[in-house]
Length: 113
Image (tube, rainbow, N blue to C red; front, side, top):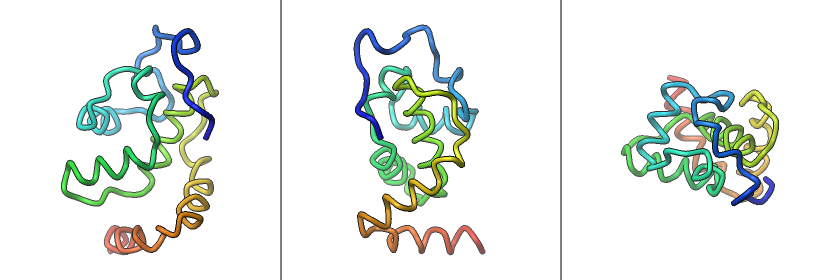
């Protein structure tokens, strides 16, 4: 992921609801995470946000939340609106590279039931 853009590079007139893939559920997640502006979102990492969301809610969320977070963060940093599923393969590669894919397999298995 590119480095966060700060200051003049972020269009402060854009709201979280203006970002692609950000609907009511993602807005609730951002609220739980204490994120209320695009500028705040641009400073975060999708994987850390996901881990924090899971800890704060006490449940393991669908890993596709990471894809949505990646998409929203990328757009918050100045990227084009991109469907969240375009980030799925990147997420899987990053998790496999970090050696934490096993950690999420259990959550995926539970969701599939």
